[in-house]
Amino acid sequence: MTRAISILDIARVAGVSHSTVSRALHDNPLISADLRFQIQKIAQEMGYTPNAVAQSLKDQRTHTVGLVVTTIADPFVGRVVRGIEEVAQEANVNIFLGVSNNDPEREMAVIESFHRRRVDGIIVTAARISAEQSERMAHIHVPAVLINQQAEVGFDLLHTVSVDDYDGACQAAQHLLDLGHRAIGYVGAGNRPRSNTTRLQGYRDVLTAAGISPQPAWIKTTPPDHRYHSEDEADGRQLTLELLEEGVTAVFCYNDMIAVGALMACRERGIPVPEGLSVVGFDDIEIAQYVTPPLTTIHQPKLRLGQLAMEMLLDLMAGKPVVDQVLATELIRRTSTAFYR
Image (spheres, rainbow, N blue to C red):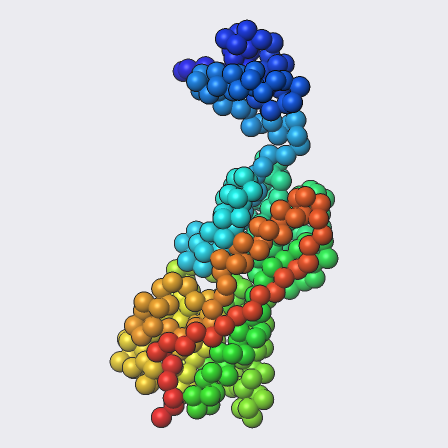
């Protein structure tokens, strides 16, 4: 195996001391511009690569950030990660990726693994960090930003960026009411406790304000222990089949993949969408515009969520104050919803 080129190797070729080479490679003004150029040229020609570990020990920074995602299979995650990467690349920060599979203990284990790798900061998507775990994070003294935090506790010690789940749900429910629907179902996600509770409340409040009492049979929720993205679609199909027995004419789904499952259930039963059932999703993932019919949904600014989380983390890493952020959602009207006939 070829030995890595060291500063001592460069010093021998350049005919200078190793400290002079070190200063030249770091653009130290104590070394003349001509000599810096010559040494840097020799280093490049010899294929010298700086030792990142040694550099991090010197400046107390590794220029790395740990990113925890629920699963790489979720299309929602892809756009968020892209936003994070855009800002990180501009700041010359590298990303380590870890997967939690919606398991809070696994999530904490990944975070602690990142800490042992001496990352400069941590971002967690769809975080499930409990109050006890937040205290553990406080003790590791690594700046952290949570995206769409899911645990139902306060977080004075951590910073968050999220979307307005309540308003998004209100927009979805109001859209169906405006189309004349009165028997409106809701299919929620039990493995997303905080946002599911908030979206369900928005749905209930809008129906109640319209003089409609949401029936318990109209509300279905997927199991709380589901960890994998593929289960949303299967649950959406099964729970929509159950809702069809309750006589609903429209359904608001926690996310787009559950809504895709609802479309599958309608196809299985020979029920046309939107004539027989209007369907609304949440997230506006890319597939939403390509399914048949294209899905009416609530748009989350996924790219901006990632960008803002990384911007906040960079500020925290620089010792600057940050303020938690809540981003607006937007109803995207497509052809999976129609007037009730």
